[in-house]
Length: 497
Image (tube, rainbow, N blue to C red; front, top):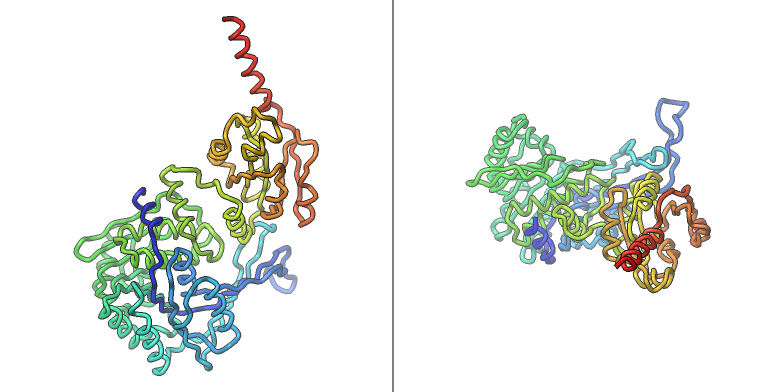
């Protein structure tokens, strides 16, 4: 794992020629509070709407978030949806110069209706697709081949993602793969859910999931033996060098022609929130890793980390390189990955909030962590889906409590808090109060202990619609009482000598 950390931190910005079906994803979020009296279906009261680049656009966003330079090659419509998709891809950091616009073919749009049960847990209720899946005509196919040729010299790898929307025809796909391999490029293919993979002949890497691998090979995958059988079938059908079969929470199976196969598991149990998007994230990571010269084992190990983080989120949210590095640090027990600066924390909370989670915030010095602190933090965590603990810096604590405090330095205090299961994030602030930090993070709830007479940030919290909750006083020793007890014991010891 230490080697993986060094590898991900050393990634550059490889250029990736990315061909596929680019889709506009719409999300309509709302609260579900009752059942429709006209039919036994939920009534969704719309709260907000969002649009993102979907389909192969997810892969582009994933590769860009990892530091890659994806060049998108595909077909979209000459319509408003196409305009929006181009803008979203550009904002994600992708080169859209290879996207061809056709007036008589609409931009594919997928609209998902998402209910927030009890205002907390996001649940997809319905998806509506607007698209054409007719195979591309001869003129469009030639335009795609021309777009690829323009990118081949600069690209380190060619990635194909097939959603079976008509882009990858049986005639065009082998031609694209042949041109790329003749140019000396690795070609990685994420196949469509189809029963015949002969269109992908000549690819370097074929990357189906378990179901897709079973469908095309006719092998029911139940153990390592059947995994190996299916992987061998895949490389035989496609003449590929490598097969990567993704296995959801079980990781992946890697088969290399001439070397054999092996399972590559996830390094920790996953809390699967939603599987959609995990394959796109995995493909983006594999593309960047292989373009950077990783061997196949390293690339799949890193892809497992990225895919594992993705399934714990609602919808598709690209995983950044530093998030993967932090996850690896957590796996090998290095420095507190939960400890973040405020800018990074704001981005992380934005992601959690998009998942419908309630953000809980508390602050204090937390000097000499004791049982009273732990009980208080455990109670605070029960109010929502994520608990942020903001601690006064050493300078701030001295201004508030005197020159002899804090007893424990800010980095050590942050690390101890981060080690608690009930704490999700820790950040350090230099100001005398947490007001400026709260204005930035805008937590749903600020929780304070029962010994706090006045909550100085209350006006700020309530101004943006948040709430302040004061817990009952928890009986037990305070930090000051513990320090005084230690000082008294020391004085008694000195007196007796």
